[in-house]
Image (cartoon, rainbow, N blue to C red; front, side):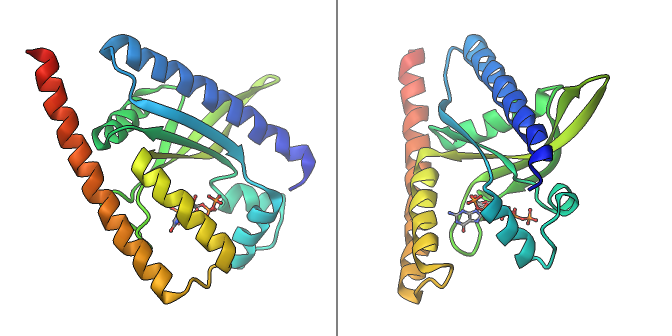
Length: 199
Ligand code: 0O2
């Protein structure tokens, strides 16, 4: 990417990190409960941006990056329980500083690989001299279990350069179902725990 444009993504990442931190703190203050295990943010590498654009038949230009790559700024919010995913998503939806452009619920409809997460494509304002610009970013919200699966899957994809052997694909699809079941059980257990806490 033209380094002259990179600063906008850096500003957007900072804005989003700050806004999310405030929202999460506010959530904890109001509900007396912290749903978030950790938050990670990154700026996509030039190599990865180029791969994505070229894979879709676009030239690597600043204009194409802005139009066709929505995750140059990426934030991942990892939560404890399934219900926390949806609480965090509605918390973000209430923010007046983050505008939701698109929602992708890969928890209700996992990808063929087994990948499961809730994605939000958002617009973040950055305040420049005398004007405001909106930068696109991606927020991924997932449970610890989904994150565990996705990080192994990421390593597998890196190792096999997307040509994943059939038996590995099958095993990962099966483990994705195990993860779904585990998340459901943990959610139920958390509900039982809350019942005891109220008594
Ligand atoms: P990286 O290395 O994480 O940056 P679209 O919105 O459809 O135009 P896009 O961006 O492909 O295009 O959307 P998608 O598929 O909703 O989300 C892409 C991101 O989700 C990926 O970014 C991954 O972070 C994650 N993801 C999607 N599918 C999988 C999967 O099967 N396994 C894993 N581990 N992660 C997945 P990048 O740019 O591919 O990679």
